[in-house]
Length: 130
Image (tube, rainbow, N blue to C red; front, side, top):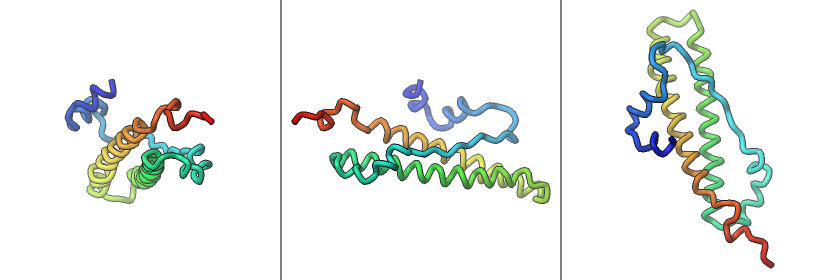
């Protein structure tokens, strides 16, 4: 299903994946971590450069993803603040949240693409011949 969705234009994909109706609904955002990669960060230098590059790009993109999640959680919280005007509420939803969700989806797709470039477990350079 993922290759089929990726082949669609962005607007069509957005339409398919977003529920119709109430724009007032928020998305539950979650930050992610890579504890195994974080623990072995110093050992990444043992891998070929192309693998090092992919692993570090995954880590960096996940950091950027998490920063955006944190920002959007704060913006979503502001939508419940009754002291802001109706116009500012509309701007929060239209400008910050909707665009932010699209940015997160794009970042997540980048991360998925990078993960798909990590060599398989049985890659020749991982064999223990010796």
